[in-house]
Length: 406
Ligand SMILES: O=c1ccn([C@@H]2O[C@H](COP(=O)(O)OP(=O)(O)O[C@H]3OC[C@@H](O)[C@H](O)[C@H]3O)[C@@H](O)[C@H]2O)c(=O)[nH]1
Image (cartoon, rainbow, N blue to C red; front, top):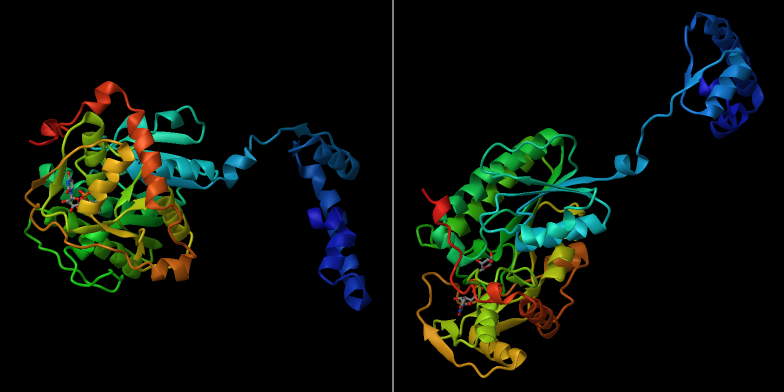
């Protein structure tokens, strides 16, 4: 009816019905509609208007009083996208929560807190548009309301963690991913899953392109992580092709920055912790194995862009600047201004001898490349570790998972 009463000329003009025979006919029809509308208004028991302006119009046209009820619509809230981030209390998950909050999303964080730590997200709890569920995603996942996006980042990520909790690692990558894909399907949400350079195993192709199938020992101690992530990619593609779920897959290469757990066993927190405590730096193997370290802000930017792209196949996100672990130990000694010795331990089984991402796809598809060089990124990371309390710094022993293993 609004078209018949309000801004009639404008609507007719916009739809090309303001002149000629068509125009005369349109005005004739509208006139009849208005007469019919007025005659019917007698049958209305109560008039409700959603503003004073509409109440005045009702009075003018129908000569009837109306009650104004303002709709409780929080327009901003309606426009907000809702995103579920699993592994929210972990290193990468917490940085992603920060980023999506900053971008104006309503963020729902989820974590079972086995390897994650509430300390990483406690600054978000006071925010209106952040919620947190303490939940293990290997069990059925329920999130009330609508969801636009899901980021699946729950998983142990340090080799020592997944050697100590191998079954949980397999379950979160398989059962957990299955639950989240099911959730994405019912919510019609787009889901991005965190895969890893570990899907290439101990790679025989260097640098690693997304087309490389990898070299993974399924029954080796690292297989629990690598194969969980490979399964995760497969089931994600199956949900995409079979159920039409909108999916994205990021293959994350070694990423570092503030909020890494000092005692998680990975090389960066291990070396920095050792240097700060005045201990020898522990190099595994001869130190000639290589890694390419990506600063967390770069990683988050790549993930953000991939989520919003229309590309379904896996994309490597990492910094291609490759270094041997031996040279890296020297860099840490310089950075921390210490004069620690390095000591050599056996190389863990199936520890990849080389790793460097080929990031051509990320550049071409997302216009993304790493911006923060190792010197800058490591300086920020070192400052973060230095800011930890004495008690935190002294925790050199690895996290105790005994209460989760039964
Ligand atoms: O104290 C240490 C710790 C580690 N290392 C070596 O440093 C290299 C890097 O080790 P990290 O534990 O940091 O990480 P890795 O590259 O082996 O595994 C990582 O790969 C990619 C991600 O998915 C995961 O975060 C993790 O599995 C390895 O060769 C490791 O043997 C040491 O020499 N000394």
